[in-house]
Image (cartoon, rainbow, N blue to C red; front, top):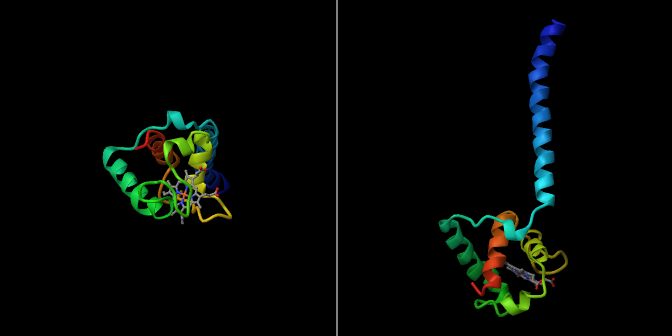
Amino acid sequence: MRARGLWMVRPLSAVAFATMAMAAAMATVAAGWAADHAVAPPAPRQSELLYLLRQDCGSCHGLTLKGGLGPPLLPEALAARSDEDLVAAIVEGRPGTPMPPWGFEISRDEAAWLVRRLREGL
Ligand code: HEC
């Protein structure tokens, strides 16, 4: 009985170990993450993101992104900020300010793509 029980447990712990190893690998990748290496989202998702930028982000940052309740998101306004800072602002929000976190809807890669668009003036 005991031996049989062990057989049942072993494959399970192998799965658990693989999951842990994968999580560790993903954490390493996340730590080394850089906006300029982010992959552009597929074309239909790009349209969705640009729509979101105008509608949702535009409600605070202005329809033409010149600023409103939120600061302007025009290229010259963002020039002094790092990609990491801007991507973090989008994904995690700015606690204590009206800037909400968008991580539930926008991935880091997508935020990085948006930052590149914003830097180019869309
Ligand atoms: C409810 C209002 C509101 C909405 C909606 C909003 N923002 Fe913001 N955002 C702000 C405010 C306010 C700040 C300034 C926070 C601070 O003081 O650091 C900000 C800051 C930022 C910054 C950092 C700018 C900088 O110069 O540091 C970026 C980038 C940004 N928002 C992008 C976005 C994007 C992209 C969206 C839509 C997905 C969005 N925001 C939606 C209010 C908003």
